[in-house]
Length: 96
Image (tube, rainbow, N blue to C red; front, side, top):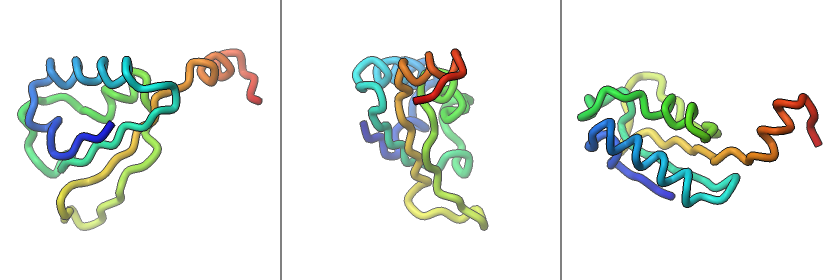
């Protein structure tokens, strides 16, 4: 799933709904690509999108590091849908 300059323009209710839908349609370990201005731009909502996605079944695998606060056409972030079997292994403390 790819979202470019979209989530910051939506209400927090709609972003939460989209998170649920992204989680529903992605296979375990599926990729979600988000590109926007993150906290360098004032979004419509007050939701911390990255944290919300991480708390709801996704893990952030990549984020562009911007040192001087200047970005160009957005900050890309890549999230992966967590695999339920990996979560169970983590809970049990076993890894294959």
